[in-house]
Amino acid sequence: MQIVYSDRRGSRTMDHVGSAHDEAELEALKAVAYQRLAAGQGELDLGLDVAGAPGAPLPIVASRMGHLWDALCRAYDAVGLDDATGGDRVFRDLVLARIIEPTSKRDARRVLEEVGVAAASYATVERALPKYATDAYRQRLATACAAHAALGPASLVLYDATTLYFETDQGDGFREPGYSKERRLEPQITLGLLTDASGFPLMIEAFEGNKAETHTMLPVIKAFMATHRLRDVTVVADAGMISEANRKAIEAEGLSFILGMKIPDIPYVISSWRRDNPDSEIADGQIFTQPWPASPTDQRRDQVIYYQYKADRARRTMRGIDEQVGKAEKAVAGKIPVKRNRFVQLTGADKAVNRALEARARALAGFKGYITNIDNPTPEFTLQAYSRLLNIEKSFRMSKSDLAARPIYHHKRESIDAHLTIVFAALAVVRHVEERTGWSIRKFVRTARRYRTIQIRAGGQILTAEDPLPADLRDALALIVGPGLAH
Image (cartoon, rainbow, N blue to C red):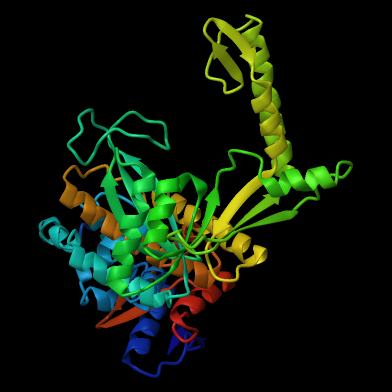
């Protein structure tokens, strides 16, 4: 394709535009040639429709966040959610729209249109939501997630619970006031989450807002094991999730566990060490082991308790004790009013500082307890497994912030369960993307959504164009969709 310029004296100059190998390339070169011919020339506004005229800008007929959407679809498929839902496009679109921009189900249509995806009507979404709240639908998703995590009888599973509040004054039997981790008084629900050791979600369950967290763990684990026909898994949970009765119930179910435990009194192994080493300081990271074998009449396995000392933990605990004891002394002296303080001992009208409690608290500063009933445990394995609870805490933070899990626009139990099903699936996709790329989902979405794929009409042909990708995004996309598809 060339542009030939000539004048009255017969001289000619040529401007080479390019070479075409098919009709689409020829149309594109013609458009470029027309624009070069019209460059620098004024235009009279005659009120005529000149769209598509030679030299006019080429019309964009479609624009989509192709790289972002294709990567999320590939991650959705990789987790196994497409097979689990039977190719339910409405569910997939709701899940991926929540990852891109958490919003209401009604507004998800706007998000999808901005992505460049044809969205189902809100009436279609409303008809589908009851299906997403059913146990059968959620179990299929849990099965897919367990298969993706390659979960087996020897696998570690992490459990934690949180609360989601509602902006209402009246409880309804499900949304009820209770102990809130956010210190709110509104009705709430309690949310139990089960993940693998990396924080990948395996099951989510909602409970009444006034149900104690310690009563939520066993029902979730039993339901999960029944669904996947597992005889035993190793449960890892924080001390705040476990009561003595709860631990016995876990033991009665024949489950293995690694649990954090509270230390109400100075353990014998610690007091014995101090008695034998009166002039020595406990080393940072030192672990004390206390076997707890089962007697013939006990309905449990042999257990082992580990007590680990951390200097930094001791420093922070000591600072808190000093502050509380100082306030207790001022309260006893009548300088400040008596408030909730564990070191103030009240005997009738008499007030005193509980020095025995203070001594015990100082002696335990820096220690944390861990108890397990697995066979032949080691301190390193036990503590490392417990440290993985940071992964489930990350999943909870992600679901609350990045995925806006709090069901603001839902009031009935069925719609709340459907909403949590979508959040659960979105969390699975997010954890897969983050594991594959090493990027946070917020960074991945914010970066990838800027690069759109555009279709342009040139004559009778449709041309595809896109912004060039930076190297780091191209590498991240390749880790999700494969190197051959991340252009």
